[in-house]
Length: 173
Image (cartoon, one colour):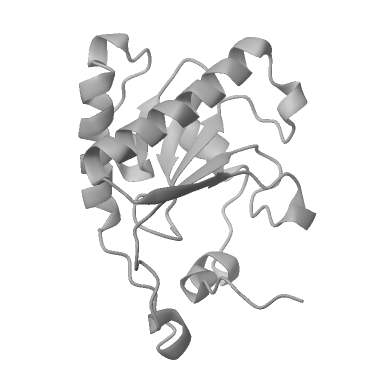
């Protein structure tokens, strides 16, 4: 019997909003507007992007550049960078935001809850003790402590400190 639920009513704008054509991730990977698109880091084979409809402040995603829905379709090099960027993102978030813990995971396929099932991605959601409250249930409101653009700046500085610009192969503004 299920006795706990994760309420996320603020995501209604994403669920009911107008859907863009094509793959959301591929569209952002191919544009040259990292700040607008919330891409905080570009690797050779994957990117780190903030979730525009976060479950919590600094909700980041690791997204392979290759459009695939399957882990086994990644080459060894692609998979290694994908998981290395997961590790790096955890390190950056710990360094700059000091969360108490994190949720990390993937939903593979629509049946598992994937909102974008056609393009594999890893979620990293920082958590702080007491970051849940009555607001989503009572007021249909999610309390997100940091604005997306502020979070972008904080995480971007964190990545830049660990991975200087000369090491970032596809630096874009």
